[in-house]
Length: 88
Image (cartoon, rainbow, N blue to C red; front, side, top):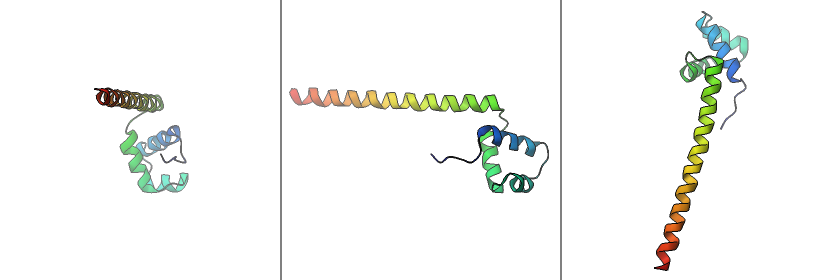
């Protein structure tokens, strides 16, 4: 996964400046990012606050861990089926 130069807190602060009325081009120049990035960030974070974003990140990590566990279990089941199928 590509790492960004800005932390979630910084992105949310920039989005709050934009909501307060600052122009996207001015913010891009001030903080040193492409103006299009602001719209991508706005689509991803919307009206989130910092605690909401941290909670989202924690849930995404937990979801990834659970998906890995399910994949491991499915692989174990498939291996057992293959072993039992060959013996009979």
